[in-house]
Image (cartoon, rainbow, N blue to C red; front, side):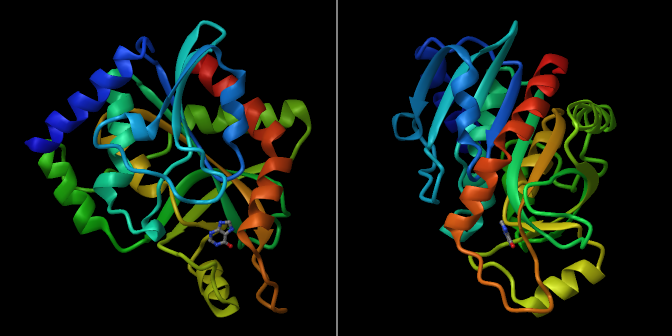
Length: 272
Ligand code: HPA
């Protein structure tokens, strides 16, 4: 049970920074880190200062925990996450979230950037995740990690909270921007997909494709947190013409959609 002790040690370090007990944990994905600036009375702790924490190396992932309040609700925001494509295992990817849960978080809101597979989705639209297809290929490692901290090893089903999905969609309707619910396909990366892969992923029922979120959401469910996952379509997955998408394009499109994500985050946090 060494891992359980690591989680305690990391939580203790964050607590020692004077962060208080968070109620909602927010994972800010590619190009969406700016939201942390909205938190009041914020205390930021770099991942490098927390024992056993992974270091994020991906573009636009600052690598710090920011704890503060939004209205009356105490929030802990992860500015940046780590991914399988950086060489990390599920145990490392999920570690920060487990620390946030240990500190007291009861709700998880995850954001990410994705490629739009459903032809009805345009760039900068928000897809509220209601289901996923896991093609990341690390479920056995994740189950081993769960066993290590006495959590259920079986994959939880029904991961995405219906009430939070409806709340997210109602915010979009109220504010007049497009958002729909659908299925997120998780790939391990590091590359964006080929046209043939995009075609395949659409055929099997994916609405968007990305390289994160599923391990964290499953772990949060094992820990009993309510989960909401918001995906920003940063590029339309073209199956006809060869389109080159760069990580910089993805960050720029996510930045442009950050007001939309911010509106939903504020409502979900108030509900959390
Ligand atoms: N594929 C996988 N991950 C992504 C994409 C994509 O097209 N866009 C942003 N993240």
